[in-house]
Structures are given as structure tokens and as C-alpha cells.
Image 1 (cartoon, rainbow, N blue to C red):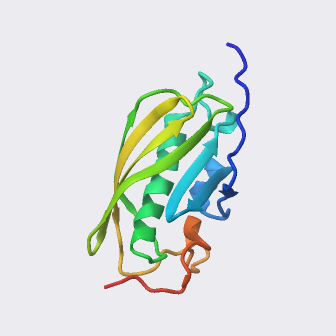
Image 2: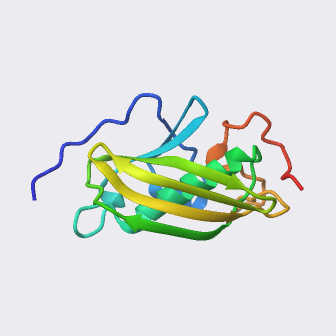
Image 3: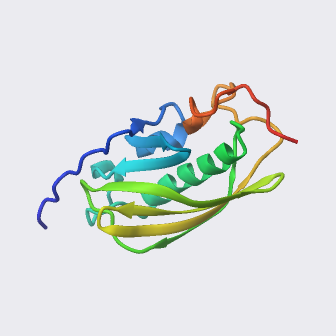
Length: 167
């Protein structure tokens, strides 16, 4: 199989914070905020690939989960844990090693204790996957492994990070 050229990380993307437990397995993973749009990106590398040399479905699911939960939390302007209740994905095309992928939001609906997000993962060649996710908003902030509230990948994106979840 011919070596794919390595694409560049587009301007405006920054690394997401580390120290987020399982999310760190997706590193390096990126985010960009522009005109109230939050986009997540992944440059597919060996650690994201399966034995066929394409982006593993689990890596795509993790990217979708991070993005969808972040969109839901950002829409309600609260930095808190949001456990995933459901995440479904339709895989449309392969994400290849060296390829830049983006998770883009197509819609968010917020209810009192639940958030619903839908989005797509795209490459420069087109649609890679589409997904829908449902999140539970507990009445307490998310905690890191050391018991300290953790804003996760939203760190620095919401002005008042000391907010408590809404009733």
C-alpha cells in the first residue's frame, strides 16, 4: 500500500488539554473556536490506526464522543461532567493515516437533564462518519481522578469555569 502524504493541521487549531483520562489516548487531538463554532480535529497517526492502516472505529467514536459532549456542555454554558448515555455512528469512508479529520456540529438540543448532539466527521475528501449522541447532565460537576472538578476539553472556552450546573 502506498504511503499517504501527511496533511497539515489547519490554522487556528490548538491541542486540547491533557490529563483527561481516556481522552488522552486520542492525543494529539485538536480544537478550534471560530465565530461560536467549536470544531475538533485529528491528524490520523499510527496510534489511531487499526491493522489495515486506517483510523480505528474506536478512535472515530472517541473523537465523536469528545466533540458531541463538548458541544452539549458549551450550549448550556456549564462546565461539568456529562456521561454518555448513547452514541451511534454510521461509518461512511475510511480515515487514512496522515489524513486530517474534523468533527463538526450539525445540531444540539438541550433539555433539563439531557443533551442531544449530532455531527459529522469529515476529511478533505468528504464524509467519513455521521453520529448522534445523548448525554446526561448530573446535578454535580464532573470530577477528575484526584477528586477535583475538571472542565475537560472545554477548559478556557467558557468564561466562568467555576459555574455549578443549572437546576
